[in-house]
Image 1 (cartoon, rainbow, N blue to C red):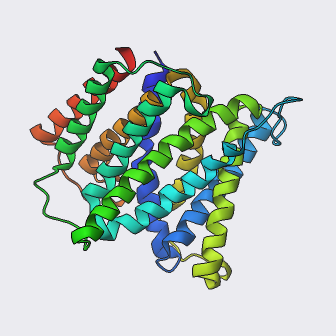
Image 2 (image 1 turned 45 degrees about the vertical axis):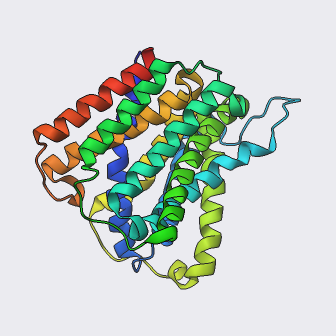
Image 3 (image 1 turned 90 degrees about the vertical axis):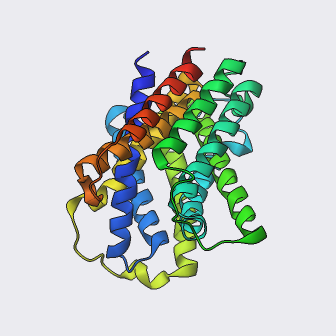
Length: 305
């Protein structure tokens, strides 16, 4: 049962990553792809260091005769796509929909992966109660974020608005695929640490290509000074990828991604309540507390029922 609290705790770190990467973006000429590349690179270096110290060999150790399917490389691609997708969606959909729609995609794809055992994930029955639990999580997240009460929105409209909404769901589905792929990769590459290395290497290379295409001059410039915590994005990123690769084979994809998301929402509320990491200070009122309780109840239902 300790695995579920660990997943929630890892998810609670994600708001720190978001705040750190957002602040780092200001130090690299307001270039989001550059800040994402730096974050991925730091995460990759940390994963190599952790693997060297804890395992002894930083190179993946595929067992003799192991057939690695082509899709093992999708984890890094989906990770980079998730980062870039959020960058694209935020100005088009606004903050609330940019958070909620990917979570909807993660829940749908996570339950699908569990039901069919896709990507060699452990096959788990998707009972009606688990579906209800996932729905309760979504309701709780909507309550916390104030969906329907928040007037802030992006600049997309008409048919384009729905295309961006579909993209938001698709980005979330890709994130669930990333978790499942990394879980399997950890079982054949030697360890979850090796899986994280492969994932982060692929993601960093894709982001490097994106930087070379969009803003190559930024690679020769030194980031301007900023708070120490703006470099924590890579630390959290490494923890998230390693945690996902470790937990998916144990908890299943749906439970892992739902726990991560629930921890993220709860961690964000705590961070705002104390005004940490540059967040605007905002108290947790009764409505938001109710939403957090709904999220917790939904997570427990998905895991235990």
